[in-house]
Image 1 (spheres, rainbow, N blue to C red):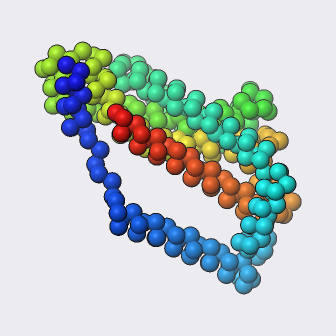
Image 2 (image 1 turned 45 degrees about the horizontal axis):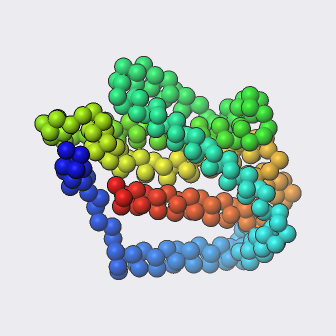
Image 3 (image 1 turned 180 degrees about the vertical axis):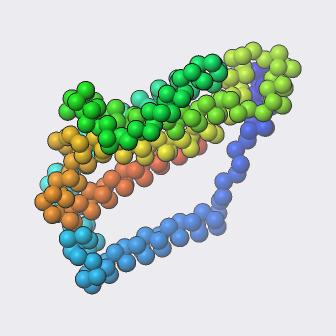
Length: 270
């Protein structure tokens, strides 16, 4: 029974083929060209005087500032703090969203009663409530983790509900005609269907968790990339400010790459 169900659903929910060969090479070449164009434009604007040096530092100065922060070790405590806050907040948000989303998917009464309140809570600007969260949880790791989790929670929740409930009637009827149990229906139909919804949400959630951590560092922190950006901006160190922004971008890309690799491994071994 289990093998038959798994085979049937695998045929129905097969992942569409990804572009290979020439298309991948063209995408990579285009990405490199975009980076070259951005850096070239940046260099011209910064060195020609078209933009004030108080607003835009030349790429060479930014790289020099980044090299100094790496060599003297001043970057690592800030990066370590932001990575911890982001990952802890992301994991907390995903775990909570999967549990709550599953409960909502299988209990329409509970979903109709509670979901509107969750939706209302998302209208609160997190920057505005950040001082309140800091006042409640203190000035250590906790408030930044909470802010990261609050921002990352909602997209995973909505996509979990959608993935578990938006299953075609034909597939459900097929499982019931084969006398599948509720667990088999969940294991071989609803969870594979939900993965296609959840993994795109995880990419958004990771970015939002990083933003939440940075917001927390802006409000109350003595370390972290957000704190470093705030300090460099205050002291007028423009090149160092852009250097920390580059570090932030690289960390974001690393998160995206890890999640993309995880998705491929899960789909391959499903």
